[in-house]
Length: 239
Image (cartoon, rainbow, N blue to C red; front, top):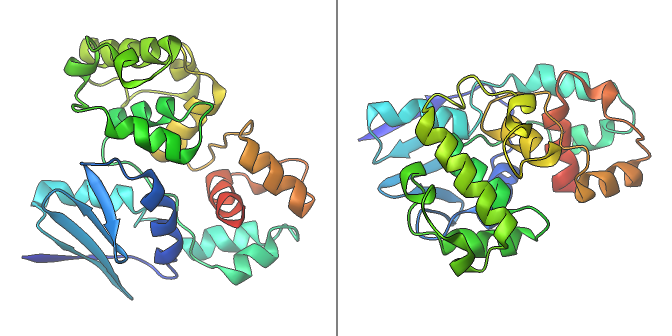
């Protein structure tokens, strides 16, 4: 059975897939020929709806979140285009979405893996983790996959926190995430941006964002509120 998940255009599917593809966790998800795949589920683009095969009804809200289908791109783009430094980027690629997360804990682990390493390096490490369940990672020795001890401890602490409080991400804020061992502002903002659906999140210390901001002559993301996450996506894609 194929489900059709509608959205309001514009929708830059190519940009979203270009972001997800190098970050896909090996053995769990993949992007193949412009199609996102996760287990039995395949998601492809059509002009008015995403076409989803292999999914159960209970999977559909996750897919809507992952692909940011409820965003009103016209409103967001109109706001960001008020800044003359962003305006050319908005005009050249309307409909940029912020990719969400299939699972908040999985995305958070992936974010910790990405601390101080390249996207490719983080993806390689993610592929070495055989089980992304909190119960498994709370006890796992992740130094065996080549992870520095401090980062391995951060993942174990996060996993233990989720085991203790399964609703941790439901009530999480950037501030509460920063209270967890090994999670600083960058990681917390990235988790907020993708897993918590906080559309004004902005990982301001990200080197790629800082470089992209310099390239367009922007000194602060404040003019982009309350849609700074969408500005971040544009800058990352531009970089």
